[in-house]
Length: 444
Ligand code: ADP
Image (cartoon, rainbow, N blue to C red; front, side):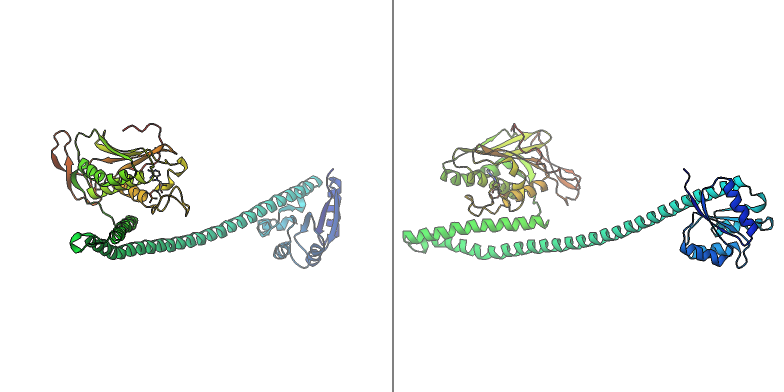
C-alpha cells in the first residue's frame, strides 16, 4: 500500500489550491494536505511540521518563489520543492532549480497524471540527493579521520625516530665507554703482568714456594684479564666499524700449527687430544694473520673449555672456487639447536645463569662473526647436545679489503707464485650465513 504523503501547498489563489488538491485526489495520491497562502506562513509551517513535498506557487503575495526557496535553504530546511509557474514565469525555471527547487511545472500544462508523476519524481530525486549528500558527508568525515590518523602516525614516527636517535647515541656512548675503559685498563694490566713476570725470574732473588705460587697466580690472572679486556676492546672497535684488516700473504698452515702448539698445554691440562688434519695443497692466503689466529684461538679455547673428555680436531681443507675451510671439532657438551643463532650475539651464552659452570664474556663468537663477515666468509655450526660441536669457517683464499685501491695481490694456485692484479675494491662481502647451521653431514 502506498504511504500517505504529507504535502504542503503554498499558493494564495484559492482556486489554484483547490485544483491541485482535486488533481492529486484524482490521481489517487494518498496524502495529508496542508495549505498556506504566503511565504511567512510556509516558513512557520516548516518549523513545526516536516513534509514529504511542497507544491509552491511562484507568485506569492509577500515573496516570490525564489526568495522562499532561498529562505528554506538558509534555514537548513530540506524538502523536495515543486514550483508551479505561470506561462510568463517559465524563463526563470532554471534559476529556481539552481536555487534548490527539485522540479518545476507550468500551470498551463498541468494535469492529474503529470502533477502526481512530477510529485513522486521530486520525492525520489530529493531522496537520492539526500543520500548523495549523506555519502559525501561520510566521505568527508572519513577523509578527515584519515588525515588525523596520518598526522598521529607521523608524530609517532617522529617520536620513534627521536627515540631511535637517543638509543643510537646511548649505544654509541656505551661502546665508547667500553673502548675507553678496556683501553685504560690495559696499561696497568700490562704493568702487573710485566712486573710479575720479572719477579718470577731467578736473578731477582730466591722466592719461597708460596711467594712463587702467589706471583704465578698474579701473572696468570693478569693474562686472563688482559685477554678479556682485549675481547671487549675488539668488540667495541668492531661495533664502531673501527677495526681494519691488515691483510698480507702468509702461510695459513704455519699460523694454525703455531696457534695449536700454543694452546696444546691447555688441552693437555684437561687430558684432551688435540689433532690437526689437512689436505691443503697451497697454504698461501691473503688475509690478516693476527685476526685469523684470533678466530682460531677463540674457537679452540671454546672447544677446550666446553669439552670434558675426548678429542679436539682442527681441520683445514681446500674448497672449490678458491676458498679454504677451517673447522674446529670437539667431543664436548654440544649446543642445543635453539641456541644456534643466539650464541653469535654479543654477551650471549647458552647458559646465562649466574651460577654457570663455564666462565667467559660471551663476546668470542660475536667477534668471530664480525671478523668472518669482514673477510667475506661464512660460519657453519653443527652440534648435538652431549655429543660435541663443529664450527666451520669458510674463507676466500684472498680477502677483498674495503678501501683497497687498485692493485691487490692475487695468488696463483697452480704455480704457488704470488701475482698482483687489479681487483674490484667495492666487491660486496658474501652474506654471512647461519642458515645452514645444523646441516646434517658436515664434510670437510
Ligand atoms: P664465551 O665462551 O665467553 O661464553 P662465546 O661467544 O665464545 O663466549 O660463546 C658463546 C656461547 O656459545 C658459550 O657461552 C657457549 O654457551 C656456546 N659455545 C661456544 N662454543 C662452544 C663449544 N665448542 N661447545 C659448546 N658450547 C659452545
